[in-house]
Image (cartoon, rainbow, N blue to C red; front, side, top):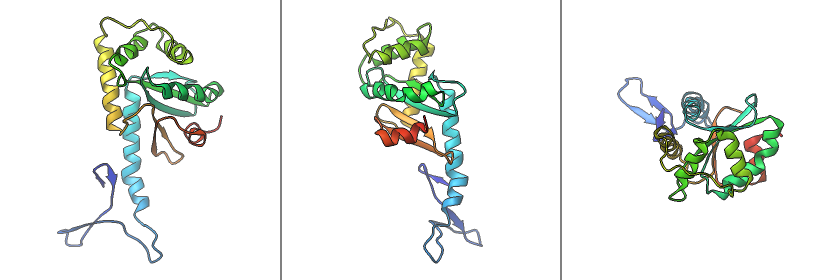
Amino acid sequence: MQYQGQGTTVYLTPDKQHAIMGNMVDPEGKNLSDAEVEKFVYAPMAKAMWQNLEKHRWIAAGSEKASRIVYVFADPYCPYCTQFWEQAQPWLKSGKVQLRVLLVGMLRPDSGQKAAAILMSKDPAKTLADYENSKGKLALQKPEKIDPVIGEALKDNLTLMDDLGGNATPSIYYLNAEGRLQQHQGMPDAETLNTILGDK
């Protein structure tokens, strides 16, 4: 079962009057509960969270046919988001990874306006790429009034980031080989970057 966002096992007594929470171990100390918790708790949780990410407003970079998808929450003023963007380019250009950027406005008072300017542009994917490739120096035409749909999308992205435990940008989410949702906050080091993005 899931309790406070964590998986745990509960054993019901034969008379069904009592429940015992905890892990079952064999004589060698091996945890026999892990496989069941993974199958019945964490796998469904990962699937639900991944589907939630898919439903939100994101901007894609990289091939639609990429075998690996990575979601990243990014603020227009976040230098580490720009650094992650730059270091991810070899994977994007190889066609093996698609980066899906969920813009949020959290670092500065006008972060939301900048994010909205990207999302409201004629070609958000190109605008985002141009902005990141300029290291955030590209002048964006910040809207006087944010489109209500875009404003709501930015709020939803920030709420989702919070729900997933993200409290810094970039907040990066991907599935490991077992299909389990993984999270990394901040700029990953070289080894972690390879783990997140896989083979080039």
